[in-house]
Length: 151
Image (cartoon, rainbow, N blue to C red; front, side):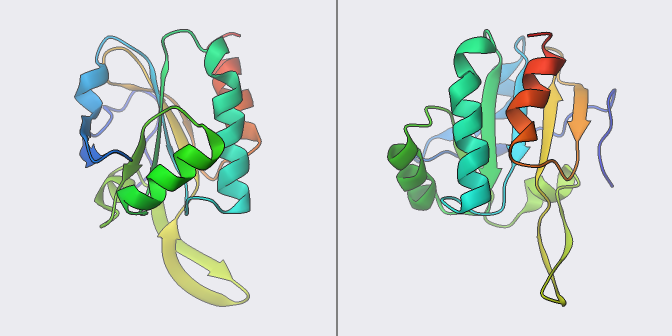
């Protein structure tokens, strides 16, 4: 079930690339872009993360958080390699992705499997979904964020 604008954003506590616990509720009072990506350091995920890194200076105090099923060590390598500078959270059991409707059946070369559906959510200062972009393309993520923020 995909979340839509007006829904309460499911809270979560996950480990970031440095092994620190990060909670969505830590960001109350700020807008937060939470985006789900399939795998660190793959072409689409790299384009998406670098695109977001490149607009960080234009989003004010809006936080950016990336979430994937990668382990914290893989997230740390990804962050270091591309100097991303925002939290990359490890959702090993994909329970947070499921809560956001970002986990589901995918298909590649005719083979069906379960995986991350690349999605992004802008959460407002009160913890409600302001914008939801299911099945977003990597290059549209930063553009949509800037547009939603009126930048």
